Length: 93
Figure 1 (cartoon, one colour):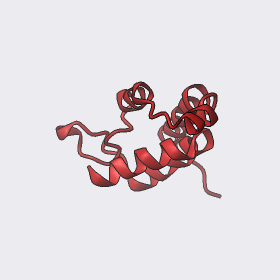
Figure 2 (figure 1 turned 45 degrees about the vertical axis):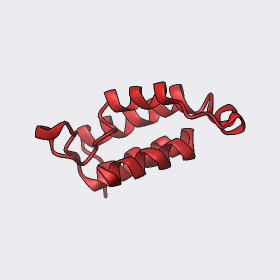
Figure 3 (figure 1 turned 180 degrees about the vertical axis):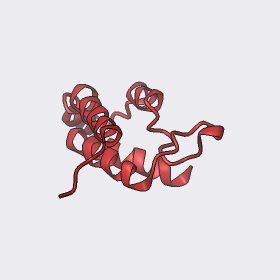
């Protein structure tokens, strides 16, 4: 049986909690108003979501691509648009 490690679970839970608190309550409003929530993206970055699989010595979190997929999945539950933006940002970095 497949189970997440404690670290993997903590990463997923952090992303889930962030999405529930900062994304989901505002997603429809942001979409309707065409609002780009820079302040929320800065909060995500402070949690390490701006450089998920980038080496730590250059400011990243140095997590795996699978960790990133778990993070994006949880963020998408709150706001698919912001999850996509963060995913693309990570691909570019």
